[in-house]
Amino acid sequence: MQFRELAIPGVIEFTPRVFPDARGQFVAPFEQSSFVDATGHQLQLAQSNHSTTRRGVIRGVHFSDVPTGQAKYVHCSRGALLDVAIDVRVGSPTFGRWVSVLLDTDAHRALYLPEGIGHAFIALADDTVMTYLCSTGYAPTAEHTVHPLDATLGLPWPADIDPLLSDKDRAAPTLAEATDATILPRWSDCQLRYTELRAAATHSAG
Image 1: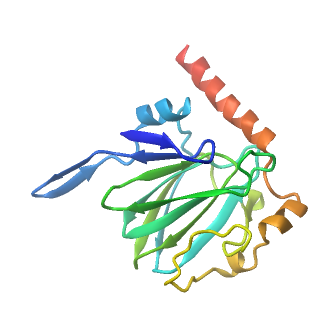
Image 2: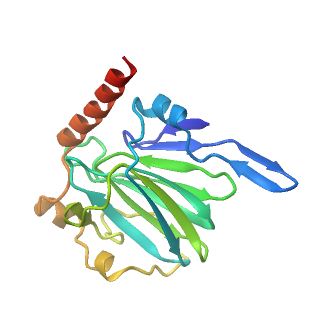
Image 3: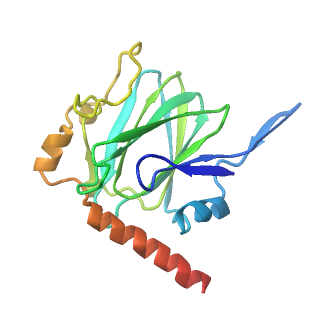
């Protein structure tokens, strides 16, 4: 398993080995040992999510309150999608910036988004399946959105696809409006959370 931190601190791309043969192929999109090497702590798994999405649908930008927040490890189980991580942590040196990764069933890349990172994707094929490993369960009162078509963010949605949004995402505030409403996570709170996770891992190893 190869991994690399992207241009937003804490956002990590994982690329597993793919083993093809006459029967098809085998791949392990998640390996705890590689995850620990990349992050310094284990992935706390509380919930696994599975979404099937038609071409052109955008899901996001979604994020959770910190503390405690919800970290996500995501990969594409069928089809193809453009996955985008957005730094919505107020005070972060990369606040308002984004990175994107093509997730598909050729390379089987996965993306880790730590607590406090906004997440969105657009399906590039019908019946695209996204699998999420989540560090905490769904908590409706802690979940928030930012509008995925916010011109200030300028997310990299393909120009040749007419985006389809849920009513919730269509009504979401812009990043500026979310900042004014003080619903965004704070960089300092996120840093405390990451430190707690690494400290717990060190204590467990000791």
